[in-house]
Image 1 (tube, helix red, strand yellow):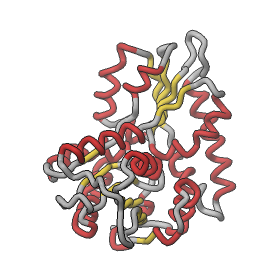
Image 2 (tube, rainbow, N blue to C red):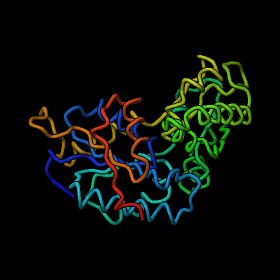
Image 3 (cartoon, helix red, strand yellow):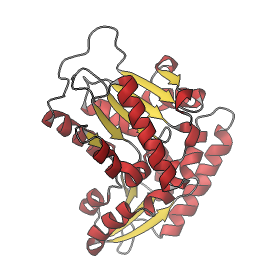
Image 4 (cartoon, rainbow, N blue to C red):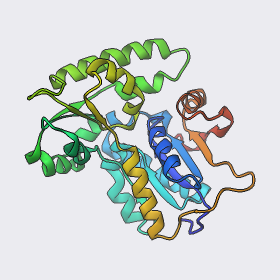
Amino acid sequence: MSTDPTHPIGVFDSGIGGLSVLQALQTELPHERFVYLADNAHAPYGEKSESFIRQRTHAIAEYLLAQHHIKALVVACNTATAAAIHELRARHPALPLVGLEPALKPALALSRTHRIGVMATRGTVASDKFARLLASVQSEAHFEVQACNGLALAIELSTLPDQAVAAQAQISQLLQTYTQAMGRFGCAPGDIDTLVLGCTHYVFVVKDLRQLLGPDVQLVSTGEPVARQTQRLLAVAQLLNTQARHGAAQPVRLMTTGDLQGLQAAAQRWLDLPPEVCEAVPALLS
């Protein structure tokens, strides 16, 4: 790892979902540079085996360390965090490392009915890490946990011009199916009044969820807490870049192992970034 405060922070996800975390990181850390890698060729992770996810996580971390000299790493994927964060910490004990977990504890502070919905990938809800997290809060509220097979992939496909219409229709259908399966949403006693978005992709369908659930249900994601934790770890390690950027160094660099056009469309749509900041990294395909 780099000990130069001017070096970038690495961020990765199975696909475009982690862009929601990158957005929060940019807001919290305006002087930092970021290298974001989307493993689109293997997305979504949520329906892959744990051993495969661990292998991809280590390969990407090693690539970012060796080729981009990152000073910290944010695993912007709930599934990869659940499967591999403990191994990453063991392999890179000096590296400031931040993972994600569904925001069950923040949701507890918001819920008034003490009924909380959780939407996440199958890989996340089946993990031991999630089981431990859920067990730690189960006595304080009732949690309706829903594995949302296919939703992250549909959100990925919605950025591709030739698949956007069909993908959007699938997103609408999946959201309706999964929210109905959890139960009644609202603010009355017995209603689910808080919904945890346990996958970074789901942040990009908040408007669709609002149409289904109404304006009063609280939607909780992890981007802002992760950004604050990243800031704290960098400060402790004396790696914060507190100076405004100078020169031609690009503040954000986006890479994908998959479809470049999809990443470009997502970056423009959700981060207002030009296509030039995106590139393909086929060397990481296998």
